Amino acid sequence: MKVAVGLSGGVDSSVAALLLKRQGHEVTALFMQNWHDTAGTLHGDCGWEDDKAIAELVAKKLDIPFHFIDLSREYRQRVVDYMFAEYARGRTPNPDVLCNREIKFDVFLKTALNLGAEAVATGHYARIATVAGSAPPSYALLAGLDANKDQSYFLCQLSQAQLEKSLFPIGHLCKPEVRRMAAEAGLPTAGRKDSQGICFVGKIDLPVFLQQRLAPRTGAIIEIMPAFHDNRPAAGGLEELCAPYRYHPRSGKKIGEHNGAHCYTVGQRKGLGIGGRAEPLFVLAADAENNILYVGEGQRHPGLLRKGLRIAAAGVHWIRPEQAVAAGTSRRCLARIRYRQPLQAATLYRRDDAVYILFDDMQRGITPGQFAAWYDGEELLGSGVISE
Image (cartoon, rainbow, N blue to C red):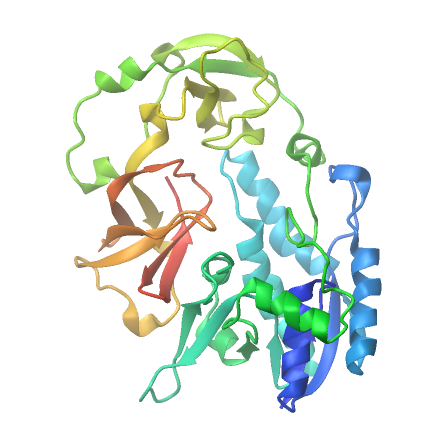
């Protein structure tokens, strides 16, 4: 099979290419440049030049063709513009999930197919399985076998058409084994550190990064005392259990100022600039419309803990549409609200207007704009953007 590997300059994609070549596939390396700007990036360097040079060395070592493609226009339109729009609304987006759905397995996939490839491969720690007896074939997205590196969450928005043309050659391996294979093959990425930060952008200073489009605005920091939650009426139905806490400036006391509520996310403790506390302050909510930041002291503050979440119906995505829960019904599942969070027991409820996920245990830091993903064992069933 003719396979185009997204060679990033890291060890995972390098070993993916190595395995595919050993399996007898006709492998081509494609390196994507998706970001040019350095504003807001730490050290003022996106690092793509080094990545490209290392990727070329890997391709040369494996004796496979190497191609460079610039997808920065599409990345800006589909990922970065979305990021700024979400932050402006006081929500915290997950650009890596969007990058996979919109760039790696859409624009990049189509580019590879146009170049003659029959499939694309990446170094993700995830697996794809053809569902037995399905006609036409149906594809299940499974967690990677390395529980410490499972990246299925980042792929939670992929469609059947995308999975049909995708390969994850290292999904059955553990990270130490991947590094050992790279070292034994003499690949220059064997000891290279994993990348961090936003996909293709790198580690950023968020306030500086956002100032490219969102001007700083001074606003109030309001502290919410735990007693505020003690005095709240008990939650009733499903909608109430899954609703966020509603705060008002009169709900607490002003203790400081910030330079833009859009720069903060639920659960954040750094960057508030307020000390002298027995325990750290954490962000409970960011009201971007009124530019108010609500905070609470201590990681066990009740404002950080919620029982459930809501996903608007338009934002619900099922990996295998035949597994979608019918309106008015529910199912047990395992769910997570962030990468590497241990899977949590929950019940998913389908209503006409939304999907609600009610967890068995209280969850810390449910964040609007992030993706919730739900599983049946090792299979990722679906996902959606947390609306509130």
